[in-house]
Image (cartoon, rainbow over all chains, first blue to last red; front, side):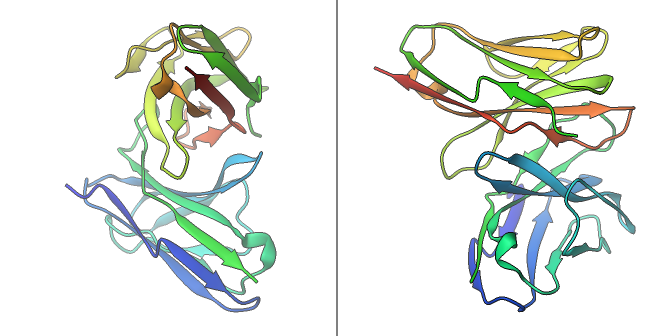
Length: 113
Length: 110
């Protein structure tokens, strides 16, 4: 059982470039989300999805787009990368409903120069 | 709005106890606790629900004061393996939107 898989693990982008961070889960979880982690800021919610075709914004959605065409995949798109988006990105999944355990991927370390 | 954790950092010797607090300005439905080792993903510790139910997998205890919208994580007789960053996450309004605090770094020394 792979759990939550994120690719790539590391990425360096130039300012203005675009890219997609991939996230896939094989646990048939309805709920998926993206967080960014910065020193002293904890984990901040970017976007989340309660099921295929449904997405919503979290705390820090600006500069990021998401879509959810399948239950398994939840890609995060950076349209025009900025140095402020340098961070570690985590994807998480869980069963729907409140008070359910979140399973995290291993993270993507992104540097924008 | 992020919940607030305190303290920001704790240094302990093996066998000592620690308490990590988490407070929110919102009416909470549940509080989650996760631990993250350096360079790794956060890992689930437990969930505390409004009404007193607690769900967890490890021998770490916690409390949830619904009136004050506060939770505390109790680490007793700490071991070296307890080192890491602890995050509380909160849900409110019956919505599955898990918001995390800024984290508390715990270092346990021999």
